[in-house]
Every structure is written in structure tokens, then in C-alpha cells.
Image 1 (cartoon, rainbow, N blue to C red):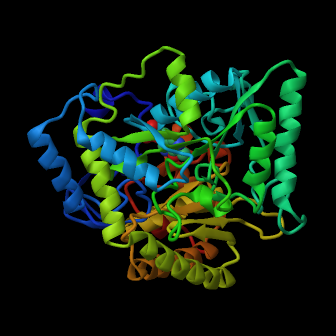
Image 2 (cartoon, rainbow, N blue to C red):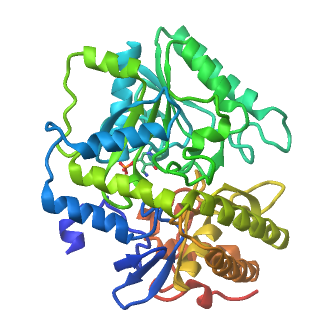
Length: 473
Ligand code: PMP
């Protein structure tokens, strides 16, 4: 039925042996046979899958009223007021949407109207959403830079591990990468164009769990504003306290003085319910208003969505989940650093709070990405009912961004298994792993690009565990 009625471009996790998840609770998901999976990647069900308080808030409001936001209602203003209180005071006006893509799409519109400029600057490999306009802002989704619209300009990913400037070889990476933005602005202006906005996730997620170097945003924001542009922080993945206390937002990691002109939020905001928002300044909101075009979004800001989002924030506060994320995140990083001493496949570990990346490499000196191995690790972990994913331009960065209730005991289970799988990987030929993974991911049409696509052979029966079929050398 799925193949017939759902568009083939809607991809599944684990193409050859996909999971049918029928229920979930806290950090656990359950398949149709009742098997329990530890969810290390669900940054949407932020305060835990189906959190009873959040479910109750939505259910109670749904029984009374749900309608569009053209009527007065307490929930929309209470949510806007609560959200504003979590941001620097300059950011006080909210627009509600139903998804992160819509929020970023609206952010482009606000930026263009306010600045009267047109072009945007984005970080290489970034993803900002699926609508036509924000797809144009998302190098992650394009095979070639030439596929991006002419108004989108890409700057280097400020990746201290494998970027143009690395912490092994260079000092003051914040300035070096910010200078790249300054150079890009000069290039844009020299071609007679103008910068409306600089868009950046406050931690690069799809681009490989990359943390912005110290001082980067401070300098970039200065350059962008000097060019008459505004600065947009995409917190769709990394917001709502994921980076641990004392912060609510990842842009705050760059310093308390860093204040974007627009922040977009989504995913964790509704704990699985579709609600997202744009938060901006009174000046930008006024320019938008003066444009004379009404902002109407049928579902954006409806009473049920707002009740759900208010409840998510309350749970984060009541259960002290930001403090928990800090504590568990520090424990996780410590364990990971220990593990990287044992496994040369681990080239780099980075993280803060419950946002962690483990970059796998075939060789620590050349940093050759271990993309196929990363996919193999994910499949092996899945067989043992732990859900991980890999991302970054080479798909070799294992990502951990679990629900905020993830515990230290969960960290121990994940790393015990990861240790076993990485040990096992050392004992088998990498190309066998590559062909196994290739088969499992659906061959040349699977979601993995590059290295895996080049492999021709498919020797492994995809319904069987790949590692057990691999020949030891
Ligand atoms: N921005 C970022 C950083 C995202 O990760 C995503 C979704 N992966 C989006 C925007 C788009 O959000 P949505 O899927 O809710 O439209």
C-alpha cells in the first residue's frame, strides 16, 4: 500500500528492513511485535514520547475549541509571552506556523521586506526545510551548488575538525571563518546584489553536528549588519534547552551578547504535534506590517497547538530537563572521550547537552571518512534495538539527539553496544561492510551518496543481520 499510495520520494529509515513503530513512551519506541527500541535520535519528542502532561493539554483544549487565530484566544498570547520571556528582550514578537520549513520561509520573507535586499548567505551542507524557497537555502539537499538559486550564497562550514581551517592547524577559527563571510559579502556586493539575511543553525546538525567556533557569530553578525542584512538563527533542531542549562537556545553558546534578529523554532516545540514559530524584533514586525500584506496561517497559532507548546515548556521547567541534559551530556562526552582512546575509528567527538556527534574515520591522519562503516554501525545497533543515525556531508558522523529524559543508564547501554560493534568492525574487511550496507540501503537508489553508491555488489540478504554474514580476516 505504501509503495502504491505514498510518493516514492518519501524515504524510510532502514529501507530494506523498515521498522513499523506502533507506540512510544519516554525515550523508548515499540514495534508491532512489541520489541522495545531505545530512541537516541528523536529530537522532536523532546520531553519524552507521548508525555502524559502534553497529551492531556492537547486533549483538554481539543474538547473545548480549536480554530484559527483570527479570534482572540488566551493560549496564543500566553505562548507568545512565555516564549518571549525565554529570549533576550529584543526578541518579543511571534508568528506561529506549523513546521520549521514554514518558519524559515517566513523568515526569508521578513528579511527581504525589512532590509529591501534579496540575497541570503547560508553555511555549506545546511538544511533549512522543504518548501521551494527554503530548499533554495539548503545545500544539503542539492547534488551540486549549481542547483541552488542565484540569490543563495554558500560560505564554508566552520568545521574545526575537517573544514578549511582546523583546530589542529590554525588558531582563531572564529575570525578565519567569519572572514570568509566578509569576503562572500564583498563578492555579492561587487556583483551588484545585496544581502538580506545570513541564515545559520546555531549548531550545524545535517552538516555533521558541527559547533560554531568561538567568536564566529559575533563577527559574522557584525559583517552582515554592516551590509544592511539581518541575522537569522535556525533553532529548529537545537533549541528548547537541548544544549543543557543554563541555556534555552544554542546561539547563547556564542555569548550572552549574541542576539539574532530572527529566531526560528519548531520540532521539539510540540513534542510531536506540528507547531513552530518565528520570533523577531518589534522593528522587523513593523516593517512586515507596513508591507500591507496580512499574515494568515489557518492552523498556525491555533488553541490546541498553543496549549501543547505551553505544556512542553512547562514540563521542561517542572522536570528540570535542561539541567538533566547538561548532566547526562557531560557524562556522555566523558564516556565517549574514553572510548575514542580505544577505537581509532573515532576521529572526533563533539557535543554539548544532548546534542552529540561521533565522527568515524578510516585513518586519523588523513581523516578519510568511514561512511560505510558508519552505516554498518547504525544497522548493527538497530539489530540490538538502539536507534542511531549518521549525517554530515560524508554521512560518517553518528548523531545522538535523544529525548531530553535520556538517562545515564541509557548512555551506558548505547556505548557498551557501540564498543562491541566498533571492535567487530576492526575484525572485518571494510569493503564487505560496504557491500552489506549498500544492499540494506536499497542499492544505488538508497539515500546514501558518494562512497556507497559506487559499490556494485549486493551479497548480503537484506533481511539478515549483516555483521554475522561477514567473513573474518
Ligand atoms: N531547520 C532545520 C535545522 C531542520 O533540521 C529542519 C527539519 N529537519 C527544518 C528546518 C525543517 O523543519 P520541518 O521539517 O518541520 O519543516
